[in-house]
Image (cartoon, rainbow, N blue to C red; front, side, top):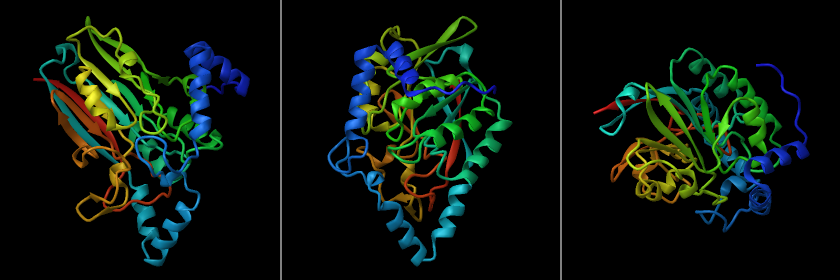
Length: 319
């Protein structure tokens, strides 16, 4: 990709105000700045260890004492490709066999080896659409230039179209630069994809887990009743709202599948307010099918146990 001119903070604010309107842009950024480093009380969960500065030190010390840190790091670097088939009688026949590359929870500035593995995996993949379901930055606040640099490296091996949403680790100030790279960030918005005269709608909501700035009604506005639709959300915690809004598929991440799990993949915590069955992999709620990616990156510390990182290739099939 050609090098784009650097954007100043004023450039970014102008871009956001043009995109969202002055009031929405300033309100959204104000909510973020008020709460981005809060440890207790904000969002769907009461306690947010990812915002606690001592968390990486404490976890690393415990794993080092147990002789497990290097093993956990090696696990985090071993990103795998998983495939998932979604069968629906409502899918237009023109989209039979349509493939979606799903990347989530990259935390690109946390583990260079894991991101190198991701780039190697996706470079030769064939797919029709790439979707990213948030958490591009490792930290939850502070500088984001390293995350943007990592996303630019990844973008070099991704093929358009690329649709994305923000996660609870991401600042909205990253949006204009991500879009400058050719990634369409859906902020309670939707895109309509066409193939052989048939269409498929992809909507995306802003972060629903921590900042609580999601708006499913706005994201799905204008989708005709009965037409096939996919919702992108960083977190699967909005599965009830998504199903009752009529979406056919929900693609999400956030949980990391637990990241540090007991043997058998039993998560110690999913950092989410949802049934454990929806914390990783494929699931179904009423007529809506869902998939929760365990993510390609790692949060707080670049270690994983009994929960290998993944990128996912979804294949849509008509029943």
